[in-house]
Image 1 (cartoon, rainbow, N blue to C red):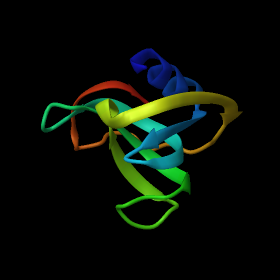
Image 2 (image 1 turned 120 degrees about the vertical axis):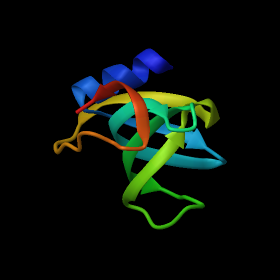
Image 3 (image 1 turned 30 degrees about the vertical axis):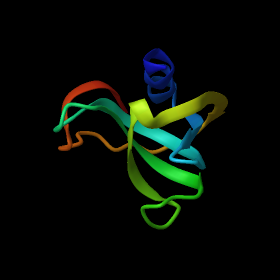
Image 4 (image 1 turned 45 degrees about the vertical axis):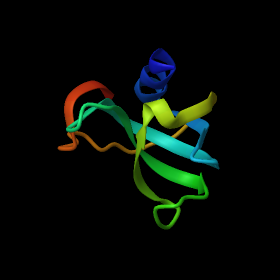
Length: 93
């Protein structure tokens, strides 16, 4: 899963996955270790539902809670570098 997310960030591929019972489509921007030590994805959620606010919006996703991950060939534009919520970054735009 980690390599799929890194590749999606580097190639700007959309990702789809299940998270806390929700089907989510995101533009992945930063993947790293959060300040509390979890592998975490910072992404712009473009479709799906969420317990934590409106969609579309920026969200943080704990990797261990992601299931059914799919990487699409479809790409997106835009960047967002340097997430202060990460202590170590594996990949970022």
